[in-house]
Length: 109
Image 1 (tube, rainbow, N blue to C red):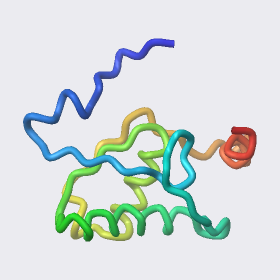
Image 2: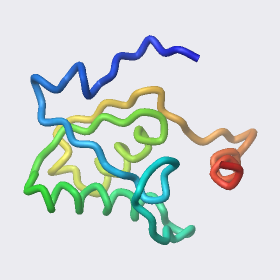
Image 3: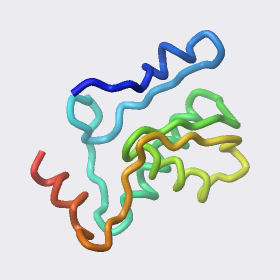
Image 4: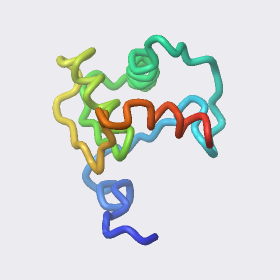
């Protein structure tokens, strides 16, 4: 499958400081660790805010593809004074007719 979406890191690198994160337990990533099933969104938001703290970044723009859009929403909820803008790209979401699709998909991969 090909995508018409540009490589955001490549397209924006001359105008912004682009930072990516090694998501905990992501396919192909190196970071591992427990993620509590009762509140994973807050944990992932804390991971991102912790990275920004570690790098000394107070305010930032956040771009999230797929599940990253959900992370953007949680970051704006948890740290509205730090996220100055957010871009949601091809964001996944809740489907009432298939409410466990994301959970099941994470178990299958």
